[in-house]
Amino acid sequence: MAALELTQVRKVFDGNVVLNDVNLRIENGELLVLLGPSGCGKSTLLRMIAGLDTISSGELRIDSQLANHLPPAKRQLAMVFQSYALYPHMSVYDNMAFSLKMAGIHAAQIREKVQAAAATLQITHLLDRLPKALSGGQRQRVAIGRAIVREPAVFLFDEPLSNLDAALRGQMRVELARLHKQLGATMIYVTHDQVEAMTLGQRIVVLNQGRIEQLGTPAQLYRTPATLFVARFLGTPA
Ligand code: ADP
Ligand code: MG
Image (cartoon, rainbow, N blue to C red):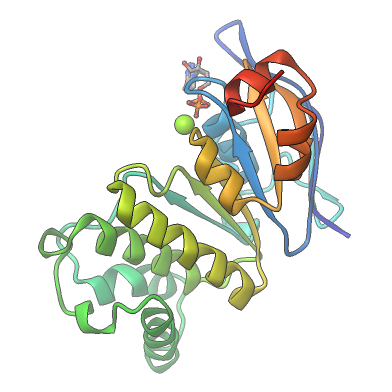
């Protein structure tokens, strides 16, 4: 069963069509990469899936249920942003515990979930620190930890590593792939970085000016780019 299904999805901002004819099935447990240049509509697509932007027309289904108007909190999704968006005045522990406290979960259970996520992300020693005392990579781990504790069915990553230096990006990519295996969750990973897409994605969607140019495995995209845009963007021979 598809975890998420988009049918003829379109987004119009102030008369400008920024997404058009988007048809996409994301299977349960898959790691799908959404790749495309800046401004092509990647974040908008993620935000519509998360319920942070409205869908102008077309259908979004989550577990087969029409979800166009489902409130974000009912979608069992968690989004991780490039900007981390941590609460600056809260410790790492409190940042990770916050959404669980809001949901009224018992303190002992919160502690268990936060400890488990911290162990997975190797940030147990940082739980008492404030975000300002962390490196960029550590902050991004906390942002991911905040998503993990909610045990979402689907993780939405919006360029989560683009503020990190190249070495750290490579390391975090490996960790994300491991996390995907360990959690068995569905993940949609947005990036403008071809290398990142090719190393991380099981399937890659190439987006250009609001339309899907091609969907395929890294090998398919590399060997048989469907359009000149895909060939050029991936730097493969056309
Ligand atoms: P990407 O994430 O691929 O860089 P975005 O989804 O952020 O692209 O943006 C796609 C297009 O939609 C861009 O042209 C952008 O200017 C426009 N856009 C995004 N958000 C808004 C908004 N809130 N209001 C008007 N235009 C927007
Ligand atoms: Mg974006």
